[in-house]
Image 1 (tube, rainbow, N blue to C red):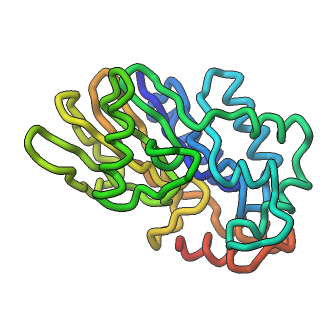
Image 2: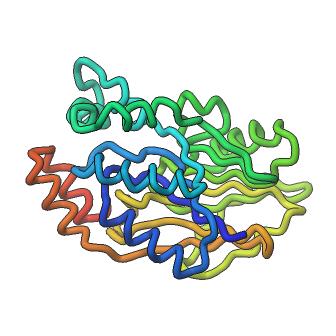
Amino acid sequence: MKLALLSDLHSNLGALQACIEHARAQGAQRFAVLGDLVGYGAEPVQVLDAVMALAQQGAIVLQGNHDALAAFPPNESRAMGDATALWTHEQLSLEQKRFLVGLPLTAQIEDVLLVHASANEPQKWRYVEDERSAGASLDAALALPGVRYVFGGHVHRQTLYYRSTGRGLMAFNPTPGVAVPTPRHRHWIATVGSVGQPRDGNPKSQYALFDTTAAQLTFHRVAYDHHAAAAAIRAAGLLEFFAKRLEDGR
């Protein structure tokens, strides 16, 4: 099976549509959306409509920290991520809010654990951003029966870590479009990047495709009209920072 791994959509419909189309062209047979469907961007209603349609077709959908914020927004903004939470909450229908509230924090498909942030206390939304934090997430996941792979998002970057016998965790920076062999005799953990808001200096959208039969993981970059997404943020009256971030890929 080819499993498309999409995370951190952040209310960016154009990026989501581009990644879905690209993944299907690559032979994706199932989708997993790893949280942060909303937040930052100007199209939360449309993105949730698209994700809910994917869920009806069998996609796995997880809850991210921005989804929790949109369902239960804070009374005042204490962090950058809070800035669009109330606005997003007001845009969503009751059905969409219930959808967000009902999403799980993790899901397991055979030997794959899916999570938004870290498998180590996923409700605390810890970042997997280096070997130490990746090791903590992997160790927590390996306490579950049969897990060999952990796939998440949250950090808006694409990185792969692996552990082989007698060695510590090793980080690997993948090349877009090049399949990486991920044999099951090792343990693997990856952050699949952000569909709607990449932060590595490249505005192209990010997602990954896991071939469970061949045991290969391919990271992808997909061009979309990020200027239109930035314009939508400005038109909605949201913070200029979020529009500029899309244009700069940071």
